[in-house]
Image (cartoon, rainbow, N blue to C red; front, side):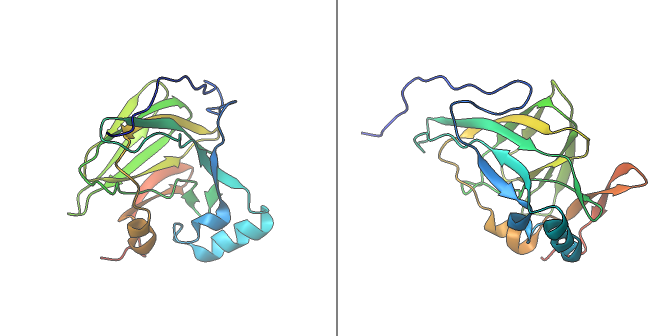
Length: 192
C-alpha cells in the first residue's frame, strides 16, 4: 500500500512568505556559480557582499506519490550580479510531463521558461496573478524589483527536480537590466 499524507496545516506569512513552523532551504550567491553568466561579477559580489542569501524556498516533507501535491513559497530577494537580476537556479521536473502553478503574493518579476525542443516563454509576475508553467518546461523565477518577489507554488509531489541540466547548459535567454529596465537577451554561454 502506498503511503499517503495526512491532513495538516502550515503557515506562510502573506507579507514575507516565511513560515514560523517550517525551515526554508536557502541559496547563497556562492550556490549560483553555474547560473550567472558573468562569473567575474559573481565572484566580486560574493567577496563584497559576504555571500548572502539571494533566495529561499520551503520544500515540505510530503510523500512523493502520484496522488499528492507539493507546495510552498519561494522568496527571491532583490539584487543584481553584473547586469543580471537575482533569480532561482531553475529546473526541469524529473517527470518532464509535469506542469506547475506559481501565484505571486508580492513583488515584481518574471517566470522564464523553456522546453527541450527550444521553445521559450516569459511571463510577468505581479501580485494577485498566477503563472502556469506548462509540462516539459524548465522554469526560473527572476526578481526585477526593489522588494522580495514572493510566490506560492504547487505541483505533483512525485515530479522531482532536475537542476543538473540547467547547471550544465543554462537557459537560452537571460533577463538583464538595461537603462533601468528589464530586457530579455540571448545567453552568450548557452550550450546546445
